[in-house]
Length: 183
Image: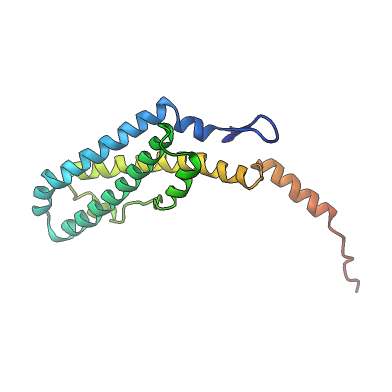
């Protein structure tokens, strides 16, 4: 199933925009904001105490991964708040597109190797895993909303992989044949 349903040549319905305005988005929004709150509470409280007890390599990994967790969640929260502003009529989709350029929404994985990661407190590892899943969901939704929007704005309709292969075949068959050299 594609990301955009074509109704007419000039009228499309974006599944991403529909999803961003749905109850499912509000569930994602709430999950994301709850995760931000839980992570902040942990890192400012229990997490600090746990970090003090870690051996040096794990303490360094804790510092790195907690900073990456915080960055990942701040990006997610900014994106979620921006989409909610569109849903509530505070911003138009075009204004959100312009504002979205300030949000560095990118896939950001853990950098610690799995042996060191295993030595981190279980609660931090859980928060990291939840944040990575949230990040993946947001990036997917972002692509559905903004990539299809960019495609429509450029006047290009998304091409299916089959259409692309057919065009390549047509081009290959239409190319002038160059006689092979004879010996």
